[in-house]
Amino acid sequence: MFNEEMRFESPIRWAMVGGGRGSEIGHAHRAGAQRDGLFQLVAGAFDIDPARCRDFGTKLGLDPTRAYADYLSMFRLEAARLDGIQAVSIATPNATHYAISKAALEAGLHVICEKPVTFSADEARDLQRRAQAAKRVFGVMYGYAGFPMLHQAREMIRRGDLGDIRVINMQFAHGFHSDEIEKHSPGAQWRMNPAVSGPSFVLGDLGTHTWFLAGMLTGCEVERLCCMRQSFVHSRAPLEDNAHVMLQFKNGAVGTLWASAVNAGSMHQQKIRVVGEKASIEWWDEHPNQLRYEVQGQPAQLLDRGMGYLYNEVPGIATNRIGGGHAEGFFESWANLYHRFGLAMAAADCDDQATLESLWYPDIAAGVEGVRLLECCVESADNGARWVNF
Ligand code: NAD
Image (cartoon, rainbow, N blue to C red; front, side, top):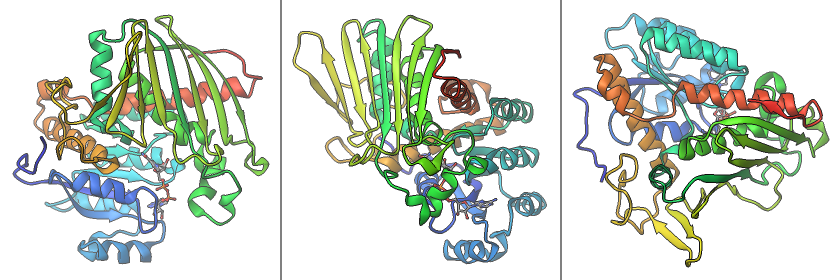
């Protein structure tokens, strides 16, 4: 079980770009990063509005001079301090990720960036090369990937409990944008603007999450795909608020991905179902402590986090902070990921390759794959749902 005993002599001095007051995801980063004491927030360029950044940073307990007007000033001035930042998380709208990540790597920082990590796969590959050359950790915040029951699912598939994988069904389909809420929601407004959001809306905003989980669980590699996308709220065109993708994998498996923000009445409905020749598993993010396990010819089972019958010897499964039966959730998943990011950064700083190779976390390679998905889907959908090689 996780507790606060795992500490560094001094926590990683950490900053954020974006994630300011009122942002959707800023608090999740701060809650996740600081949960285990491996990171300490010491600086930030939290907001596009400098005055609001200073006020917010001060209220978070920062030295007001370290709540910066912009990220370039932060990287420059922090680099000049003996106690300057060592790592930064980027939680700004998509259009800014590439430039901020590049500047952070140039400043010698470890980076954790939101998804989709860039607009184009070329940009994402460029960040990958830069992170490798600078020997910096580059994590991508596929925040659901820290849930222990997903690691149990991954291990069951790896051990062959399901047999060969035949079908992977993915969906992340909520109803929060069933009407034109971007008229009064700034967070929705930029998501519908291609200049800020990128070439897609729901595929990038939602689909990349479940897509990452499918790869994480099964290791199946996509051979080709076919996508159709729509803007049911017409003003959103060319960005889609609904998309269906059909997938063929190299091992012969097939799959589907439904990403939607117009699934009226739905809260999240992020689900992944993996069907093997002997059994199937299903995970649902609204009930993340359970994994449904269905063996052909037997009654369905509901496996629960924190129980002795799981493959607890595998890292990632026994990352409980409280016993089974108590609900762990989103913040714990993020803390589990930040814990791994922290260990990886410490290992990178002392060139401990063995630890780095043993640590799994969503990295820039996963970021590249997510952006490749978007490129292929857009190419397919905008050419009459043509099949596209991945
Ligand atoms: P948001 O609009 O709610 O907040 C964005 C924040 O960034 C605001 O505080 C804004 O002032 C600040 N900002 C904008 N430009 C800036 C700049 N140049 N410098 C400094 N600060 C700047 O957006 P959000 O919903 O929090 O999304 C942010 C990112 O996080 C997006 O890439 C989104 O896709 C991603 N996201 C990820 C998850 C997840 O589960 N991993 C969930 C939600 C959002």
